[in-house]
Length: 340
Image (cartoon, rainbow, N blue to C red; front, side, top):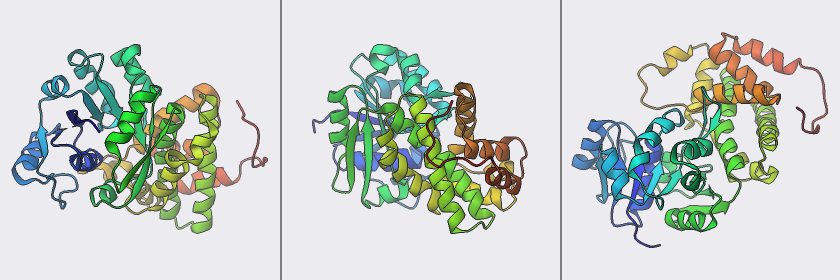
């Protein structure tokens, strides 16, 4: 892999973990931090004081809060800011990059207010010629596992084959395996909807519904991914891969999953407001649920699990009532044709 200056934009858990992957291959990695105290902590102590703070960071990770200088000085920018802030950060970057800048998005979600996928946000803000060359990284990979160098595999999606291969080589290590695909929409939807289904799985566990219920919910959640994906032009096989089934299984079953943990607490009767108070970590599924729910309604795609999660989060629907509504719907074939 050629030595190209690379920056991670976003110093949360996932951004910090990905910085350590790149630091194992590059002489220096720049990590842009929103919070000055995070940048200071990384530079002074080689620890992120907010995220994964128990893990020492390689000395060749350099933190900064200067977004404009970072954009101007680095030909490769890896976007790891929360989905709901991606538009704002890209807008700030737009006038300080070149036509050759390679953007890699490692965030997951759907913009809540506009129902927009991250790939479409890239095109809207960066312009079609550059935005269509962005690449997207997704798959079953917890930040904690990655920073500990435990084996994981992800997929890189993009429409520009040469750039996808560059990103695939850039991130590939002995413990972090990368695959490639041209199905940007499928990869994005898998990464977004798995967080919504993980919330539902957590709610199911918080209610004490048992393993059989959780297995059924995850399976039908995968079906929701597939139905929405086909409506938007995704390839069905993508949802059986790393960014679909793989990421869904990880996020919906592990205690390390922020989205599942929020769901468990909701199932046990806590309010969303109390869960979110005082937490630096963002459960992307909370806001992604809004975007997915609205997008499905706009397209006329029936997503009953997503609808139930939305009701619990934003309409005061009691979790037990949501389960009752799911179980008592009209009977239908398991593998029905795509319905509008």
